[in-house]
Structures are given as structure tokens and as C-alpha cells.
Length: 259
Image (cartoon, rainbow, N blue to C red; front, side, top):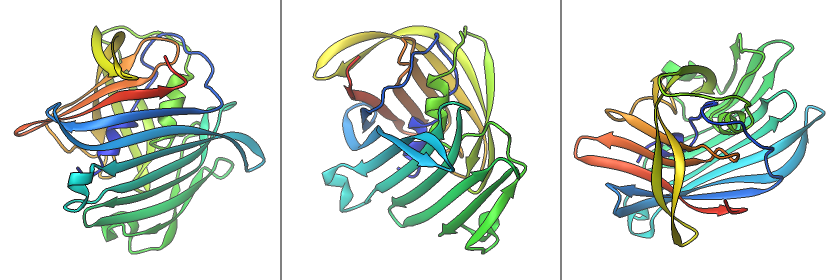
């Protein structure tokens, strides 16, 4: 399941007005094949606050790992971290470590908004992406810029409203470059989840993303759909990626604090 964690991180401001982020939070997702065979899990956390570039930031972290039965065949051990400025709503620091099967990649990046540069150091990226460089810069970054993880929290703190048929665009740092993501709101739905060990029905918006990238957000299937909660917490609830012989699904199974 290469880069499956990306499916949990691609969000835009696509629901009702948000509330403030909690100081700490843990979200756990079960990743399955066609809704029944467990492939692994992903955990998204707000660890607390930290200082970066003299700014008080949220410390964000996401981990993904394979189920026990799969780990011997296809090990997965991904870790993505970000330091996000909630006042200006932009990423200041970001790191990614990807270990999926034979894929092993990592980078760390600092965003310099005065010079509009992303300064990075990397291991394992292709010559096409990195030019065989261990470090470098990505120029012309926007003044409000997200990494894959911070885009979730950018969405959750946006004040606005969306309706079916609306489209949104976001530029995100991806694969040592700038990726453009277009999102279209398809419709409002009620979805059933097994959350905290009990069945619940939640209001959500179904969204389809379209990517222009060669990296973490590159297209890996025919179509991808997201269900984002319409409550104040604006949580990613379900992600379904179509493949040739079924689908890959990620669903929220635990939330602390609870809904």
C-alpha cells in the first residue's frame, strides 16, 4: 500500500465553520481491503505546542503501520511530522520518513517565508526529483503554504461554508516540490461508522480530489473519495481509493477527545 497515508492527509476547507483545535488529540484509522481485510492502521496526533523560528506552533504527527499478518511480507513504518503556526495558518517545519516494502525515503524541510524558499535535506529520492542532491531548495513558495500533514489542520481551522458543486485548490509541498490539489464537493451524506466500539451515524461531505504531482499525492488508483465530517471538529472520517479489483478504505475508529 505505497503512500496510503497520503489519503488521510489531503483536505481542504470543505464543511461548516470550525472550532479551535484541541491542545492534544489522537485519531486512529483502520485501513482495509474492500472493507473487510485489515491491511494496517494510521494514527494522527496533536502532541502539544513547541517553538519554531521563534513562533509558538502546534506539534503534529502521523504514523502508519502494517497489520501483523502483512508486516512480514510488506513492512510499513511511516512517520510524518510538522510544526504549524496557528496564527498565520502555515507550516514552518516538516519531516517525512517513508518505509513501505523496499521504498525508503526521508526528508526534512524548513520554510523560509522571507526568502520564499523551502530548504530541504533528503535521502532516497529519485534523480528526477532531487537531481542527486542530498540537500537543496524549492523556490517561489506561497506566503501561506502547507505540507501534507498541516493541510489537515489548515482545513479544520478555516471559517467558511461549502456546498455540492464547489471546487477548491491548494498548493502543498510534496516530493521536494509544489503540488496542486483540486478538490470538488460532490454531495452531503450521512455515513455509518464503528467509532469507539459503537455504531454511529454522522453528517459528512463526500469530496473528490484531483492531483498534479509525482510524489506523495500522485494518483495511485482510478478514483479517490473523501468523507469529511460537517461538525465543528471537521474530522476526516472515511477515505476510499478504487483499484482494479476492489478498493482500499480507511475509516476513523477512535477519537480522543471523543466526538
